[in-house]
Length: 118
Length: 217
Image 1 (cartoon, one colour):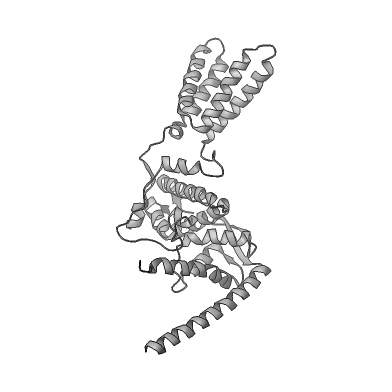
Image 2 (cartoon, one colour):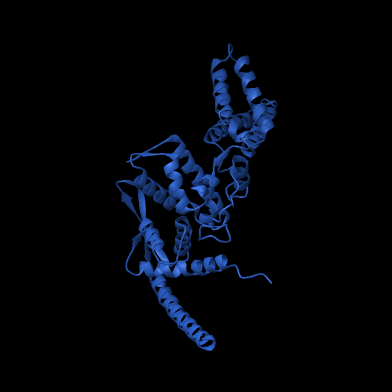
């Protein structure tokens, strides 16, 4: 039997969390794409490759979770700003509820495992 | 605003073209992604490089942004920089990019602009040939030749490229004295098509972007 590929496991875990991080970042208001990517890069443990965020943002916009607007920039190309749609805000609420349940359940499991083997 | 070297600009365009081709294959909005990515890369590179952006400065930015495959989510481990030491990504060649583009939703996206100009001119001439067929049936032959040229030039057929150049050169010489305007038009067609030489005969082993170089940084 092959051992678990830890790198792949952490990659999949982080990928699944990226959407949650994005909707939570945007809960505070609209953000310029570049700033959004930079802030995601500062989330501890997330370890993102910057360019991979833009396709994700585009998909979230297409699925109605995010809305965008372009703003002209004096220093270069127009800047795209991202914001949560009402549907996105509802999704964020549901995702956070699931996340808290998951974290709670995982904590119980870890404590239980720690007691049994402690 | 910072100035970009020719090499840096060419690298950026090559990189973005690869991302666009892969993003389309994934069914993503390639234009939106490339627009955001271009803005990100330009801002980041110009902030760190200062007044003159070189290819080296650009590559430092691209190392953080990710390979085209990572950005488009083609890698099974997309989202993380899979930079295991000792592993290298295959160098992307013109031939490979063209092969990928053939899987694209827009198979003609890499056809050079000058070829489109030639096709437009041939189209106009072809309409003239079509209308002339009733009075001059030989025009059907010229119309057939134009259909062949348009098809071959669009699909990258090398023998059509060479045949077209040969035929245009013959026309330049043949009409030089009798009809200088026709000769001049054929000369323009010859120059336009000849300038797209690399589209039909790409350098097979010339890398357009050396990912191994980025990974080693």
